[in-house]
Amino acid sequence: MLWRAIALSTPLLWSSIAIHCTRRQPNMHLLEAWLERSGDAPLSIVFVESIHGFEGHMINTYNPVSNPFSSEVMTILMAHSHRWKAVDFKFARRIPEVLSGLKPGSLPILETAVLSSRYSIDLPYGKLPPLEEVWDAFHSSQSLTRGYWEIDYLESNLKKIPWSRLTSIEVTMMIASLFEVLPQLQNLVDLHFIDPYSCYNAHLLQFPERRPTPEAPVTLPYLRKLHLVTMRTADEIFNKLTLPSLVSVHVEQKRVWLYRPDPSVFRELLLRSRCSLKEYIYDISGDPIAEDILLDILSSQTMSSLKYLTVEPPVTEKFTDVLTRNLSEGNARILPQLEHLALRWCKKSSGGLLAMARSRSQKFKADGFAALCDLQVWRWDRTLPEGEGLDDGANELEGMLLNIEAYFP
Image (cartoon, rainbow, N blue to C red; front, side):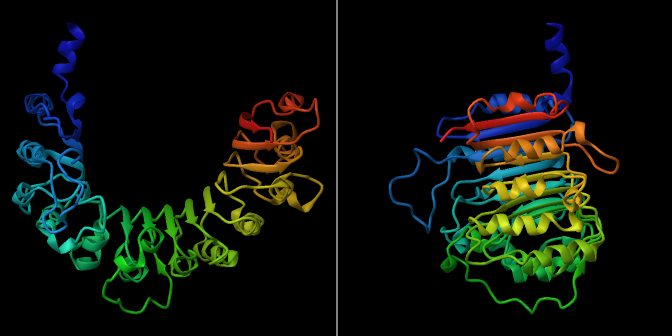
């Protein structure tokens, strides 16, 4: 009973709410009790709507179905809108009309807003309830610094978004539109950009043309994390940026044989920015080109400060040979500060993986060189001679955390 009393009298324990609204009627009394127990604490709310069971086989795109319980839930939540600190609303087909009751100035402490009006861009944007009114209310919060906007809203309302206040954003938008707003993102710390051509059919992306891109690179002085998902290469974006505070880069691109990145463009970004990159997540797929591009990048002195490396495409002996440290040869300078290495798939390796790990273990650590602290491999196509295994290097790998899933073809 003591713990129950403590829990009921501690508002912060009730300040986070996750609601999955299905065809089963939610317990509104429980929701109201939860909100009452949260007292005056700022609220973080996640709401996910399901319309399974409400919709027939045919979708009416001109009058999309909604979950009737969503409006009830939103009405209860809106009574506490002055306490909304972070909201993540995901609706199935349309936004409940009741949300248009949110007025500018009614969300004084809102910091984070994520709003998805529908599952699919196939549903016509013009037929939806007043999404713009909801965003106007969100944008009116002077505390708003993080957000996620749908592409059709972004492309129609670039000038309405308070870009200069934002510190963290996830945006799916045309590259030309990104370039248009880049100069305004002077306080941005975390940028997650998704090229719409990487996830939508081209016929759905009919938006007005934007003005030409800036000639000189745009400096974003505080940007630390950059995550790019592109259909073509990220080179066009790298060429337009100078990022002196950059510490983490995550690049995703499929079918590299269609659009091959130029490693020198990424190197030039790092040189121009004079930054010290600490984390690199490489997710560019397409054998064997992807591995060659990766090794070109990693062999550069611009990567000498790297501590965390994650590689999603398969790697072979070429990768393990290049990263095997030999203090008497020049390759000792490749990734001298690397401490954490994660590989999705290491294939066609006849002992090179373990040789690389041993060469970077504590036993062979030298002045100016960091030892590899942990090695994670989700799949290793192990083709070692009989009797040779992970235990053979146990002493030399002391101090290194190993998590390797061996696969015997």
